[in-house]
Structures are given as structure tokens and as C-alpha cells.
Image (cartoon, rainbow, N blue to C red; front, side, top):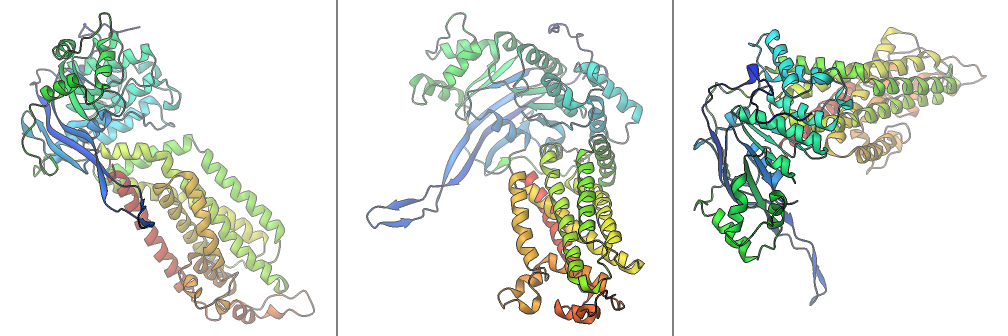
Length: 611
């Protein structure tokens, strides 16, 4: 059922309604944005020599855009594909900062950097929701992140219930977000940002991918939110006549330049002044796209652009001029890092318990491989005649932990990346809190899955049942698993899942080759020895061998007439480990852990800052 747009009480706002709010406007001046890229290599035909041209070309995406969006009015940003609509929202929201020039102001005053993050919210075209949470749970966690602790839980619950009613989501409050319709998902994504009551809301194509009815419902809710005193600007690709009636003002772009900015009802008249007559019974929105798609050399379009751009300033500031705020009253986050960590852990725990397929699969795979390994190497732990086979058990143990850990970790970030980047940029929580939460959440999973594997193998292969050896062996396995986990998170944060799995194999093969098992240290050439000293697999293997055969272990049993390796000293010399230093191996593994954890942190930081 469609809502009565003219009735101000058709969607009650209660506590979210802005009463007696002074009108204001968000304005921007001379906003430009461009990207640099290298030219293609070309050959010099005269000399037949290949000359690589290193200079860069500059492509202008937005060119000297100015405009103002007033509170209480719904602004539609239109233009053909590639006109720069989404880029403009990315610039105004602060999601894009590099290679940007211009001014951003509220009521003629430059907006401070901190305050802009509190005043402006941005909802991207792609809906980013946690599929294991219900609609109501999503809003409740958003309320915990975005509302300060000074607001008591009852008030937060009231605001969540109110938003469910405002956005028409009360009927699907207990439905998982993975099962709601596209229109409901769009409205929920808007509601998540509406919780903090932003004064400016920028929406990138909130109606794209929806049918006519769903698109109308989303636009109707957005219209009512704007009517309550907010600045709302949204990219509308191709609204029909009914949707166009709900849009108060239009901002039309053509290849990064403005061709119209003003009330919707005056657009056709403005175009007609320059010889661009809209046919009778033609949708004005469709005609605006036709005008924006004209050749840039069309005289009518050139005169129209000159008219629209006559308010361009004469100076060109070096960057988007958003003042640095010294006002301490504007805090970027509503919660402290520790409080953010608590909310993140609760949300992650709920998602994991509700969608535990990956964890269960990892555990079952570890158990299956452990049982197969146990059958193949049953009762070899104290047999001097099978000491080489028992040593193979140790390296197989490390391989299994590596691959189950890294493949699981590679899948973590790509699943969460879109939600993490959007929530982080919209000031839900800090990178530090998210990073700590990932560490805390992944550690128990690693300990449980790895412990199940090596305990099964340890028991059935008859390794020595001494607490010292069990503890030292377990510590090596867990540190090696943590290295694998961090390596997987690093690869998942910088490349696609397919490439991450491929690269992990490329890393593991040479690292295993120089583990000391296949190529002993004494047999390595001068060129290969440095690789043995940086291979994390080598230190894990040495630590495992030391845990099983070191610490003055007694001679092994010999079921045959003669066993050369009955005396462990001979075996340790054979594998080039005469003087094992267990602490040295742990220190090397710890160094790898610190290095990879730092790399993961800075990789996540880069993902947030990149455009």
C-alpha cells in the first residue's frame, strides 16, 4: 500500500522528529576531483627502440561543481552513467579525500573535519548488512555503537522500535537480514545511519535494483525524513513520473559538470531557455538524461553549462577545504575503544553461533585428517626403526594446521570487508577496536581446532606422555597456527579469495622446502642457507623436533636386531640439529607473529583510507 505523501502524520516520528529546527543548508564550491594514471607504453618507429613513457595523464571526474542542499527538501542527483553522481557523494561525505579540491560549508561556514563526520552520514549503493543478524538485532547493535552510554538502554530500545515503525520494518523485525526483500534492506541500511540523527544524509541510488512499488516506498520514507528538517540528497538514476513528484530539487550532472540545480518543477523551463524543448507528455527525468547525454560540443549544452557555472570562484584551493577542528566537544566515536570492543565481541559471537558452518567444517576436517594420519603412522612415537616416519608425522601436523588455518582466515575479511569499511568510515568504531576483536575471536577458534588435531595425532602415534613435551609441542603448534592465521588475514585483506589461496600455496611450498626436513641445513648451498634462516616452517619444525626428541629424552625402543637411530644423538646429528635451542625457535616464531600482526593492521588501515 502506498503512503499518503502529503499527510505529515502518515509516518509518526516521535523522538526522532526534529521540532522547531532552524533551517540550514549544506553548500559546496568549486569541488573538483581527478584521477592519475600512467600512459600506455609506446614504441618509437624511427629508432625501433621501446621507450616507456612514465609521465602520468590526469582524468577529471568532477569539474568545478558548486551547489547547495537545503534542509527540509529532498534533493535528487541525476545524470547518465559515468556523469560523476556517486563520486560527488563520496567527496561530500569525506569517503574520497585524495586529489580533491573545493570548499564544503554549512550556512556559509566551513565545516570542521570532526563535525563533518558527525553531521554527515553516507549510505552506499551496495547494501552492507550482517546476514546472521535479524533486522531488529542490526538496529540494536547500531544503537549501541552510535548512541552514547549516557542514553539508558530503555531509551535506545524505544528508538529502535520507533525506527522499525518509521521505516515500515516492524513486520520483519525478527527476520534475518539475508531473508528480507531488497526494499526492506535499503530501508534498513538507511535506518542504521538514522539512529545517530544525522543532519545530512547522502544516499547512493537507494532505489536501484527495486521494483516500482518498492522503490516508491523507499523514496516515500526518505521524503518524510527530509520533511522533518534534514538535508537528504540521493542519487536517482532514472525516476518515473510518480517518483519525480516526490523530489523537491534536482542536481543534474553531465560528464562531471553541472547542467541544472534547482527546483524540480523549473527544470524543463530552464532547458527551454537554451533551445532544449522537452516534448509534451515526456517524462522530464528522461529528458534530463537525454540532455546530459548530448555531445559536449553541442552549442545549446555549452551555453547551458556556462550559465550554470557562472558562480564558480576565481581561486583553486589546494585541497578540499574542511577545517581541522579544535573543538573537543565533537568526539568521533560514541564509545571508548574498550566499549567498542565489547559490542564487537558480542555481535561477532552471536553471528558465529548462528552461522557456525565454517567453524564446524574446519573442526571436522581437522578430525578427519588427524584420524587418517593416526592410522598411517600408528604407534611410531617410540620406535627407533620408524623414527623417520615419526618425524614425518611432525611436519604433516604442521602442514595440516597451516592449511586449515590459512584457508579459514582468508575467507574472514572478504566476507566482512564491505561492512567493516562502511561502518568504520561512518564512525561506528575504530580500526583498533575491530582489529582487537578479530584477534580475540580468532584465537579460541585456532586453539580448539588445532588442539583437537594434534592431541588425536599425539595419542594414536604414541608420542611420549610427558606434560613437558605435550606442552612444548602444543605451544609450537599454536604459534605456527597463529602465523598461518595472520598470514591468511593479511592475504584476504589485500587480494581476492582466489588469489589469496593461490598465493598461500606459493608461500608454503618454498617455506616447506626450506624447513630443514627435506633439505637439511648441512646440505644447503650458500645461496639457499639464508632462506633456511627466514623460513617460519623451519623454526616450527625445529621446535616440534626439540619438543619430542629433546630435553634429554631416553633412548628409543628397538624392535629389530639393530636400530641405528636408537640413540637420539645420532638422529639429531643426521637432521643437522645437534644443539637445538627451543627458546631460539620460539623467539623466531614470535618475531614472525609480531611482523604479520603489524602487517595485518596496516593493511586494514590502508583499506579504510584508500578511495
